[in-house]
Image (cartoon, rainbow, N blue to C red; front, side):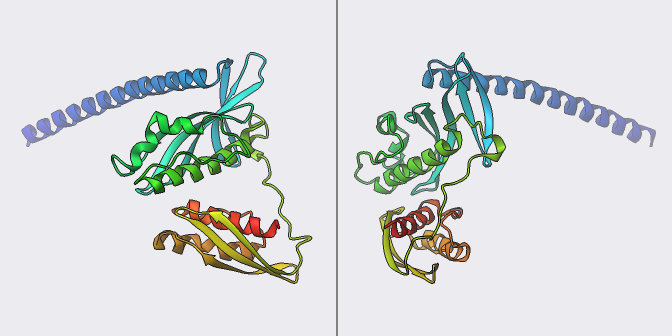
Length: 273
């Protein structure tokens, strides 16, 4: 009995020492990793924004970004992560925008596109086509045979994320956690009738008709779309929300971001006529 107790105590001591050593190792390696990531971010920011002297992590409207400043504490640019839905799944990328609103950096950090075809989106020669683009520009780039869906996903995704990031951080994120409000939307001045609108979706254009009666949106009927069945089934949920809330200022649908965003934009385009 005493021997069993002795063995048990020895095992407990061994486990305790091992756990302590593991915790210490994890603490040390975590600090090393954090330092390395910080150094990499500093190097990336310095490359994107040559006048950088300091930077801060800021959150506006629930979205986080790294905001860069010069020696006079003037806003010189913002670096934030964006995401779009590709052919093989989510595509994550880092987007750098300078104080003039121009894209100065685009790096794909995670993707599961088809090797040898869709994964060309991570290549420097491809991402460089977006550099210099700014608000109001066309975010189209050279098409690649066999990788059309992946390319279109990047076009739509970079444009959408650019607009979201720039809206929140074009002032350096000075609005803080309160953020800036989304552009106002009103049906005032829209006469009763049926209006057609189109916007590029994940695969092809989405065309729809918006019916306004009694000063309210009463129906949204899609007349043409080429989206995949599963994404489209989810994306259509945004139609009910627009009608229920009587506004296009609604959230996109997770898993069908590009398609649902296209529906929103098509409705906007219809009512802007």
